[in-house]
Image (cartoon, rainbow, N blue to C red; front, side):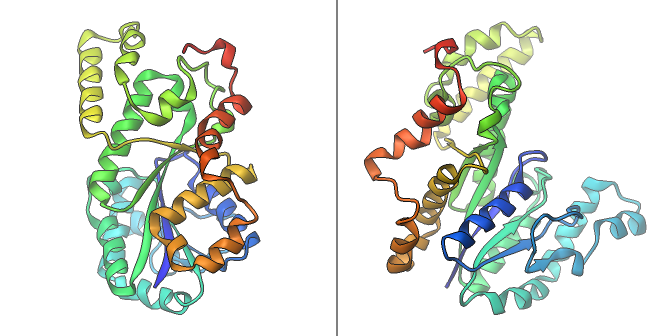
Length: 298
């Protein structure tokens, strides 16, 4: 049995930076890590990957040969990978005994809530290789500064969760830059806990766009609340404590912590946080560190 994480999220959410930083962190706490690049558009990798999809298929070749744009080319590449899953399986098998796996997927969001190819690849690997994987879905934290964009991020997260059917963690990435595009209307726990979106209505009503847009956004909020599935944790990939907190959450989600109790205890002694302190480190500490509380509305 092998463990790992599937890293997904829209373009610009920091997936490649995350894979690089996470692999370095896990190596420092004693794990052997293998990063698998499954993004054929990722032509400048900051990390050493154990498996690279470009050894199988190149996006540039697909676009030229089939006269496709980047989006169509990525769909073609994922279809091709699904049909050649044995290639990927053979590359992964030597790593299963002692490596923790990080899968770096493309940023085309349609692959994770519309098309089935990426999901089929993951499910086939889980079945054939007995993998225990958690999906880590990154969303740029600055989207919280715009109510409409925040609702879009919630809808994308919900759609992805329902489509992928994996143990799932939504992450507000680049949390250190959360107010770089404007102050937040509420404290951070409003955006991470997603408990009552009706409070957004006043700010949505001030939106200069049409009444139809505001009505649609309100109804989308109701859909998100009805499912009651989406919440977020936070991440500053440059901060050891922030990465450590996320690692512990991922390990509980994919079951790693239960499979290797002794190893996990040794690792977590380096990044230990008492369970009673978890909520503080998840939200309150981040609020204090990166946001100006006195300018936020309770």
